[in-house]
Length: 148
Image (cartoon, rainbow, N blue to C red):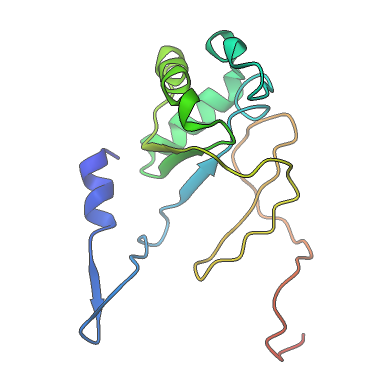
């Protein structure tokens, strides 16, 4: 999906005369992908000279480009700072990653608990990119008074 198609999907939505946040069409996912230790060697911000020569994880490249070609949105969400944007973008382009954007400055340290008014699904990277599969798991949610 080209950037102009993404922009159209995310264009202004109006409900009851007021602007609301856009919602992607069913079947389209908005992937936020970490970089270090997920698509390449795990390189800390304190060693930026290694970012340009990081080893790519080939299965990540194949899987992410497949998702992109299927029409999903690919955005890299990284703890790298704005100072690292150019070296990161150059590295992604050099290795042939297809993507729509990068969000820099993700909080460091892991153990993320994302709270949002949109549906959020999280998948922990454990060493290999594959197609995603359905799996039943237990998660923490806000107590809405309904218990199963």
